[in-house]
Length: 336
Image 1: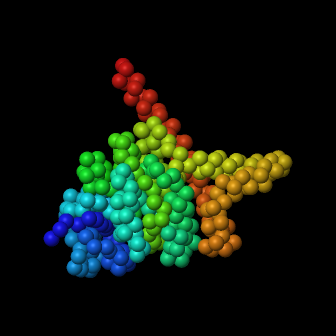
Image 2: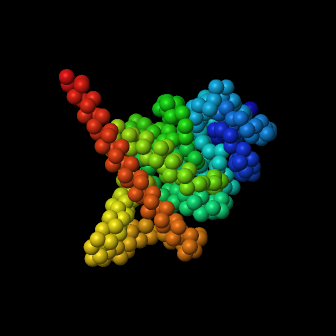
Image 3: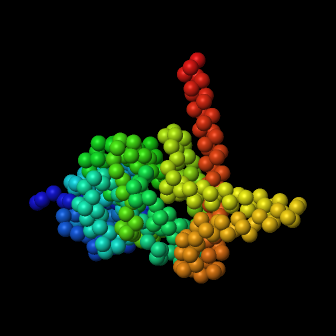
């Protein structure tokens, strides 16, 4: 039997709500010479056992959960394909997702890794879920094609490159920025990462407001800010684009002006031009909100996005200042 071309690796931890849909979509579209490796990270819901079927290699982490970084690395160790394709257990691939991934590596032989995008038809009906998934879709649709990071929800790496880089950092024991950190290492070592927005998947996750804020702050903004100051480089791309940074400044200006206007009403004159500038910076995202949910959904999504810009920028400043202070103390101790 010939070696597979693609090795699809799916880490799963108590993924009973989405795993069946994930695997069904995968097997409806799987191309020839592809293997599927499902890594059960110590689940207790029996979902992986219930999805046992021909064509799937199941690996169980005995002392799990150890986190998706650890689970993906165990899957990669068992993989036989030249291309490692990482798909999350709450993702449903499109009919052409894997084919497009394979074609991209063939067409662009200098590409060492790539990642795609969520689509704009998330099935979860709640407005928080729709907002979060549409925001992620928009960010990846407008990112730089020559990427500075990586995304493992739907991403692929050449096996030789993955092995040489050392895989995911297993110190991330929960879903966090383990994929972003891998992207930084790939770029630092001279490898090329491509964002391919035409490669899309459907995100099946249902979000709550508390889940969004906690995930954004604790699992993303805090460790990502630490990584940025460790690397001493802020890439102007994706969530850190120039428009996102300007948008955060404008939202803070609107907040301060809105409060200050109660004491000096003339300050409220700042709000209309600030709103217009914010629209210009985010026009594609706002139009997407309007198209997918109408005016009422747009109003709620606009509020959530503005709130996101506020707390994410606040975390960046606070953790950034703390990181700089830590670095200064470390240098002082080394010099002493």
